[in-house]
Image (cartoon, rainbow, N blue to C red; front, side):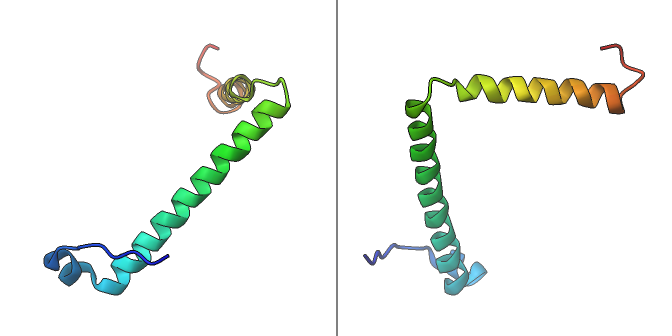
Length: 77
C-alpha cells in the first residue's frame, strides 16, 4: 500500500525529502516490531501460568542487589 502525507515545506527544506521518507519508514518498522512483540508477549503469557512481569521485576531486584554488593561496597545494603 502506498500512502501520501502532507509535510511542511520548511521541514522538507531542513531535512530533505529522502531523510523524511527514510525516517517515516523506520518509524513504521518500529511500530510493526512493537506489534509483533506485544503479540509474542501475549502469546507467551497465555501459554504459561508464569507472571513474566513479576519474574522480570525479581530478576531486576536481584541484579540491583548484586550490583550494590560488587560496586558500592561502602553502602549498607
